Length: 357
Ligand SMILES: NC(=O)c1ccc[n+]([C@@H]2O[C@H](COP(=O)([O-])OP(=O)(O)OC[C@H]3O[C@@H](n4cnc5c(N)ncnc54)[C@H](O)[C@@H]3O)[C@@H](O)[C@H]2O)c1
Image (cartoon, rainbow, N blue to C red; front, side):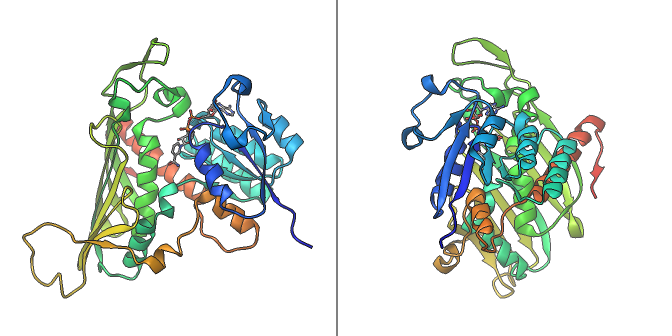
């Protein structure tokens, strides 16, 4: 007898839910049983192929009536903890968007609820799925760069600086928790740890709000209470110094996430907008001599490696639930990134390095 379909639901049906739904659509034998969002669905946007899926305004009602096995939490950050814990209490596996929570305490409560429920918890650190990020991780683990010496990470966007972009929840610290630091910085924190294999020993940072107010879609002005720019220094395992800079008001940058890592016998760089490329200058022979050209050759990630890339987090959890062994970012990874975010925030308040772990 064939296995019953995996019952899947979404809480928060905005922008990123489309990525979760598309990821789930790649999996066989999964049924989308419900979507929950406080909007008036009757007057909302065209939901296309999801028009006939049962819709709810109350997430608990949806969990009770549709009995999903797996739910994606795709709401603004403020609701991640409350809704993840609710779903876990209803015996549902959870994949939650990033940043995991508003505070470290909330993130720890989520992981405690997950552990108590015995269910799976994933955080959508989406860049972990990119072939280039995973290949870079493998090159470093195989010591192609030798002992690691330095890391530089930038994540720049322009959308918030554009007058045409209306005010939204992500500009309100009470709902978003953070600005660029939490929105993009959390990908940087997780990405550098994932690729380099190095953990954070201490951090110090600063942040700014370079745009003070913004008009909403109706033209009403609101103050921006989140950071638009942040920068921090980290000392990683082995004394490796890493620099980080993020901005949502950098004209000309769409979604520019770049990590560069040097070791004693090479340098590599990866960019989110070139997910199958890697800039690589490595190996004892090529690095024997100094180079004055300062350009890292761009190479392709081998196609055989690309084929081994795991699917994005919701699909990875669906595969795990079917018995496959799939590597996906967990709630524990979310708590870890949140602890680094919290330490950076603390360093801003105290003007001092914060030690982790
Ligand atoms: N992994 C990534 O790279 C990535 C990219 C974009 C967004 N995100 C994250 O996804 C989340 C959502 O971002 P978005 O861009 O989709 O925002 P969005 O504003 O497009 O969508 C959010 C949706 O949640 C709904 N919502 C609000 N409160 C709710 C509640 N209490 N219960 C249920 N639904 C509620 C809203 O009505 C809206 O439809 C954020 O946490 C964001 O950081 C992650």
